[in-house]
Amino acid sequence: MDGKKRSTIHAGLRVSIELKADQRTGKRTEGIVQDILTNSPTHPHGIKVRLESGLVGRVQEILD
Image 1 (cartoon, rainbow, N blue to C red):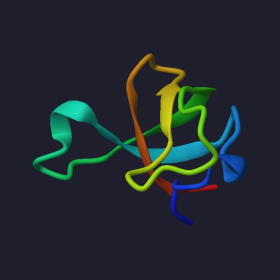
Image 2 (cartoon, rainbow, N blue to C red):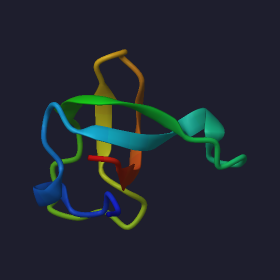
Image 3 (cartoon, rainbow, N blue to C red):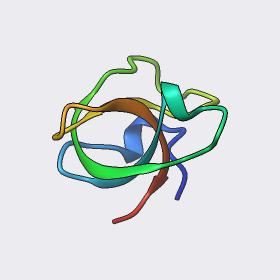
């Protein structure tokens, strides 16, 4: 499942995100969602979240 809809993402969900620094390489980082940072219901590049590790990026895939 992709991470373009805010309604499908919630705290505690395991996701794969793309960090701002990794946008050119496409490298992904896995983690657990702590906060949802995007306010709009959808975003074409993925909903921005903060992981429990403190990293911030856009959700590319929902793993749970």
